[in-house]
Length: 88
Image 1: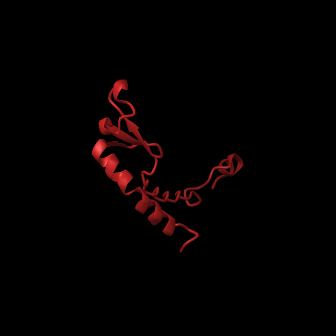
Image 2: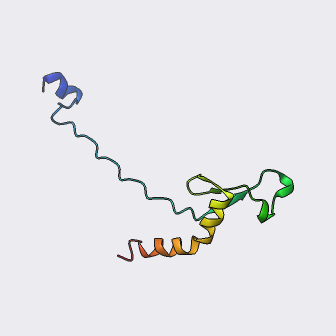
């Protein structure tokens, strides 16, 4: 390392460390689903829901997928709770 490098605070290639790769983000459980309709006249009618949007991650699901996720919601919440850090 030369005098100017030391003076300017530059690091030699041997001193430069590669950043560690970030841990993968946990998979979203899609618990907070909000229904969406095609037009205002259909709003509030559960039979006419056209899509569901997860408020946590922004993923959009079809009406059938959203209904299936809502039906399985209790099981997914229990599974997430049993995998938490306080329950090894």
